[in-house]
Image (cartoon, rainbow, N blue to C red; front, side, top):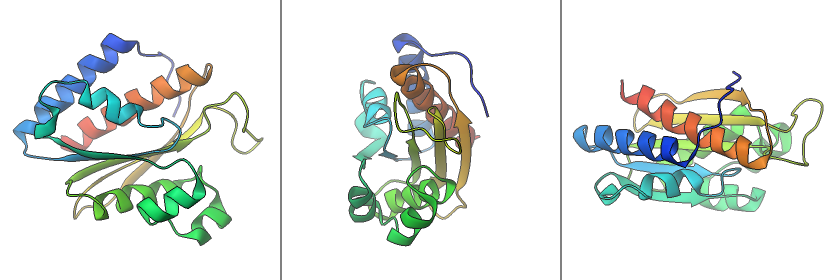
Length: 168
C-alpha cells in the first residue's frame, strides 16, 4: 500500500489522542515493538496526558540480536526473510504481547533510508503488524515516499491508524 501525505506533529498528536480515548474506553493496554521508528510510536502515544491508563510499554529493537532477545524473533526467520519482512513483523508483534501485560500490539520494521535499500526492498519499504491478545495477527507492507523523517512519520501514522482499525 502507498500512502502519500506526510503527517505533521499536530496530526500525529491528534491521532494519538483519539486512539488513547478509544483504548481507555475499551480497557485495552498497548505495547509497541519498533525498529525503523526507534520508539516514535511510543513517544507519540505517551505525549498524550493520561496515557498511563492505556499504554503498557514500548520496545525499540533495532538489531537482529535485540529482536531475538526482547521480542523472541527466531534467528531462522531473520536469516531466511530478513528484518524487513512480513514474517519478522508478525513475530515481533506476537513477541511484544508475550513480553508485556498489554492486550493490543503494533510492530514496525522497515527501511527508512537514505541507505539500506535493495531492488527487492527499496528505501521506504515498511512492514507493520497488529495483534490483539488471543487474536490473529495482521501484517501489511507499505511503500512510503520521501526522506528518512517522512518515511518514519508515515510509519507512525499508519501504525496508529491500524490500531484504530483493530479496535473497530
